[in-house]
Amino acid sequence: MTGCKALFAELNENVMGQVRFRGGPKVPIKGKGTILFDCKNGDQFIIPDVYYIPTLHNNIISLGQMTEEGYDISMKREFLCMYDEEGSPIMKVQRSKNRLYKIKLTPGRPTCLSMSIDDESWRWHARIGHTNFRTLAEMVRKEMVTGMPRVAHPS
Image (cartoon, rainbow, N blue to C red):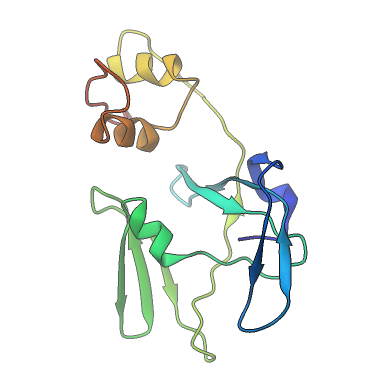
């Protein structure tokens, strides 16, 4: 959830609803979309199904939602770590004094810097509207596209 509309790479403002935080008043949901972040290694990280709540002053990531998306969450000592399906680290966050895990993420914009049609992975990347490779792999895993081969993120 976020209250910052500028963070969204895509936003469907037709999604409406309400949410209540710890017994407080209900606040309106004004959309749902995808947020894209730039990683330190140059890759991009996507968080789908993020609610836009204009009155929210802090951004909140649901660990339950991230595990549903295929990420592994590990909490050991004072650190929270998130890993992708291949076991590659996505983030490592140190616990703050008030027992929250706070991280500053750099918003990104969708880019496609190179493509080789000779490579089947890049071909499917282009066919499906330059969708990121993690999403392509998820589509194969969930058998969402007939005839789509297993794709890997080419270097």
